[in-house]
Length: 145
Image 1 (cartoon, one colour):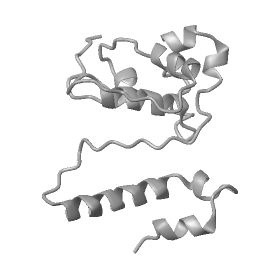
Image 2 (cartoon, rainbow, N blue to C red):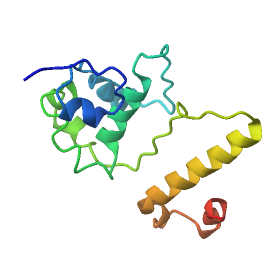
Image 3 (tube, rainbow, N blue to C red):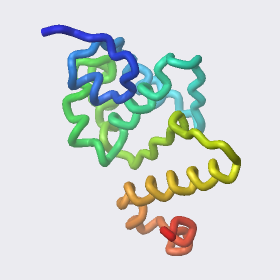
Image 4 (cartoon, helix red, strand yellow):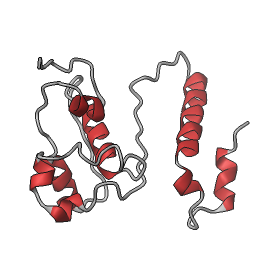
């Protein structure tokens, strides 16, 4: 079996399911859980794995990706951290926002693209839309024109 370098690959599922070299950074998940901070800012230079890190977090925490992620973390640092940490896997609604592919020539174009992006996210997360916490008034903000 030939292992490859994941140049340009920023999807955690692809990194784990195909034969790519991977530096295990899943202990970051444990640090997030233990940190109890209201906000976490991830700052790194270009090409230092920000999108891959966010993809890893999405696959770990997302309700919608629970089935896909069932064995993605086997044997990794977060798995070795114990069952208390693994109990968080697949338990939360996750919104994955990435602006890396936004390319706009004007402020108006950027706002239009942002609105379309948010509408698409809203449509993907039916469990939030159908939740009792979600108010009908909120849906007016996400109406598809």
